[in-house]
Image 1: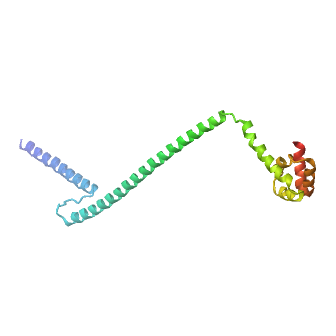
Image 2: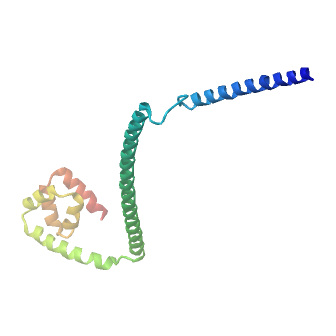
Image 3: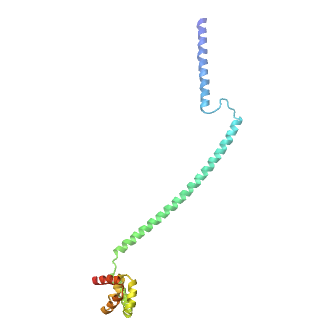
Length: 182
């Protein structure tokens, strides 16, 4: 039985010692994997400098965070301003479209629009009829042929001939073509 007991005595140390060595090795590996020293003390000088560096990093991060938050607030305010501006422009567009539709639907009264123009042309025609043909021709040379037609067609034929004789030949030709159409 003593032989049996001695073999049991050897089994226990042979199993426990490798198990303890395995646990100690795992502890060392895990400590190095986490970046901690094996036996660190809380009052070691390295940790004090690390805490100073960490606090300076934290204050820098806080400062950057404050700046980022301020920028976000500015952008949000700008976005709301732009949204209000867009809404105002949309309302203006809707108003202008409604006004355009209203103007499309209201018929223009051509009789009222044409009445003042002949009276005005008649007054201008009287002025040119009283002028000498040379003076009237000089003025008509400066006007476009379409403007001259509305005036000269109200003047009698003899006065027209005298004025057109004194005008620039190219302008007189264009005026003749417009008079022939009307």
